[in-house]
Image (cartoon, rainbow, N blue to C red; front, top):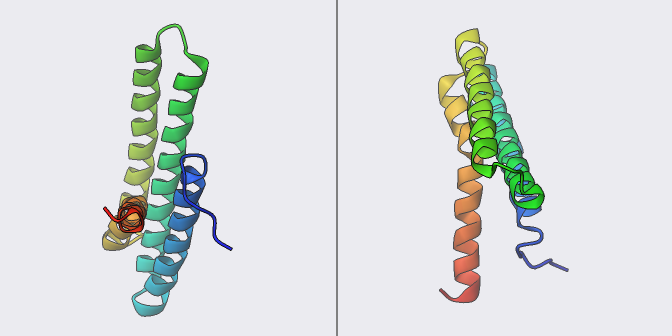
Length: 127
């Protein structure tokens, strides 16, 4: 029994698919390459998924709560999210424990999953 992908469960499908892809890529990185590559993939995927979830949370709050100054609210949250993500990436890159190539692969997990879901949706509807 399969569940249709719709607007109500799209976020959950993207997160679950990204976690599954991250698991496969991380295991592949550990098994086929090195510990640093596997760790880089795992760190990059974790950062990408957390960033995506944080972005959705902020957008839901803006649309659901309708703050008095939504532009300022969105700008502050955007700058804060970018600052935290940049700081985490800086620490990961400069630590020497992670492969840069693995990090880049991990950071692209969300994008790859969204592209795959878009192709799936287009093929499913005949478009």
